[in-house]
Image (tube, rainbow over all chains, first blue to last red; front, side):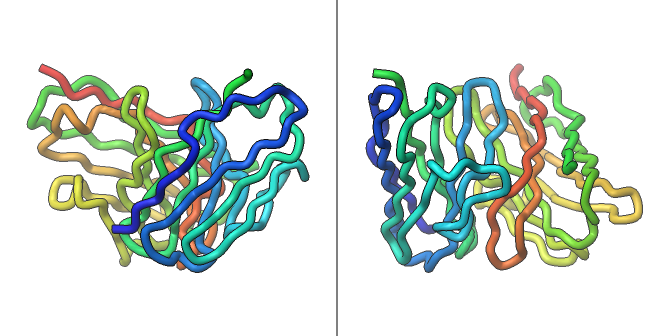
Length: 107
Length: 120
């Protein structure tokens, strides 16, 4: 099973700041990695697919990068609605796995 | 507009069974793999199972293998998850999710979820 380790677990930032979230895989997943956002009481929403492609309707402040085992989700300038939990997920190898999540909270 | 509507959740005792359903709309159901993903209270996301568009290929998490069965009826546009021998650790919100592309198994649309509680 591929283990995805997200860091940091909690990221405390202010609106307007840049957020950098990390996801590290225990073995290569190529570019087969997605990022999701989940706000309290809401369903997850796909942000980034195939490591670096923004999903439909996702603002340009969200960007993804990386391949192999190291991936990054960057939010260039945090908006109030961006404070949420972010998960990475690999679709390369069964069983599919998610990272434990990074909570982006208001500082 | 893509929509996924789950149903069938509820409170059951350990060892009992439950069948979840998901009714998708807004896309050609038979052309896409579908999945179930769950989230225990206060916890992260856990993939449960995926089924191919034609219903032949299926995959399961080890935690549910042998107890859960995923199925679909393309003529009724419905996805199912039959859950047997339920355990307390199966308590979670169960989401139906559309797979963006087979072979690149990421989830581009999610339902609102249905809550399953396993407790005596």
